[in-house]
Image (cartoon, rainbow, N blue to C red):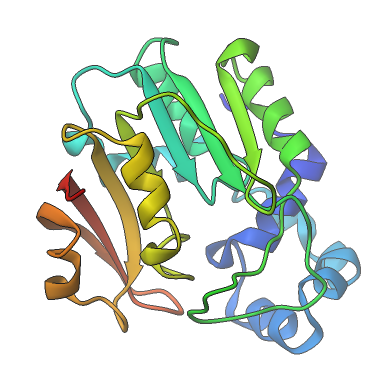
Length: 232
């Protein structure tokens, strides 16, 4: 069972649209995420928080489990949020991987929808570290980076994931040179793209092979893609 405190669950309500009803999503869009979460959510948060279960994240892993490397040493999560998906990956790989987690470390006051070069943030990286440690990821294996600061990673990454973040809310190109610097020809990539902006041909400029492995109809239609053979 994944251990989550009330603070982390409230952060998830800021981050994940699928935990809200249609009416709640309308209220959040109209009044902003902070006002919604700090005031309106108190009237119905118990029901919403009950939706945050281990099964929610297990279902997400199932969408790409068959495309995971057999073994690995280093996993990178871009736009990691609270990093909960990595708890499941840690179990799959028997507590061996090092996790390199990248995100902004702030909660923006305004809500931004759609696709933008400068995405909004609703996260607390200290909370991310605490959650991963509380859920049996070795403290020495947790490497967290604030993307608003200079990032230096000397390790080569075996698997890069970015769920509903890179390619979905902001361009892959924002991180392309960074990814090339910390990848090898064997690095695998799993990330989500906004179907309204997904261009198969442009991705072929960056990777030798791409495959759509999952599709979902959300506020923004989503394609989850698997890529390998990054072009340097």
